[in-house]
Length: 289
Image (cartoon, rainbow, N blue to C red; front, side, top):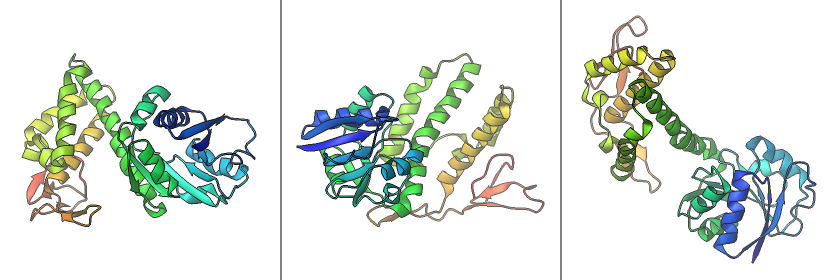
């Protein structure tokens, strides 16, 4: 039986406590919250989990007296192992799933998700005990990894928020678009983003794009709405034509064939349209170099 204690009984800490307890083989020795003494937190457990906000991890880790046999881990996606200071056995375990409540979080942690791990081998065993997949992310790649995770979760939800606002302007509810969003996401994951991409930007249908922009211009906060729309048109166009080569974790590569990259043409800082593979793109639409 592996004994553990959590510092930080918030959503993440309570979710993990419930998930490990349900998985079996792990025994909780309780949780420590704000204002409680931390010095001996690692003294009588095999595992100490620091589940505080990122900017508190270093302070909390420094307040705990190191114990040679105790593994101390954090749950941050963006922080490396150095934030855990002098503890001899250090690790990180970041679940790639939202944890909105302890009940939902516990179920999701045991649903076969991916965990980004680093440091002590116990992190791999934790992911396995929860029925998940462990991927190694070292400190040098931590910020890039977390940027991808933020785009996958926060940015995606923000785009759904824009769908809701634009749909409401036409008197339509968000759930009317639920099937479309789910199908598009499923296709992107099953087929790959480039193969799944559809829409006017991919077809070069700039008259339709302009009609969209005119409609968005009539909305409250139209500058923000247009900026977001233009940025995503640029990303869609890049995705359809980009020649960037992506190397996957196995070392194989995939590219976009012979399509020309997106470039800006003409003097005057963008007075002429940009081109993608020789095809003009309206200058007002956000570009991705």
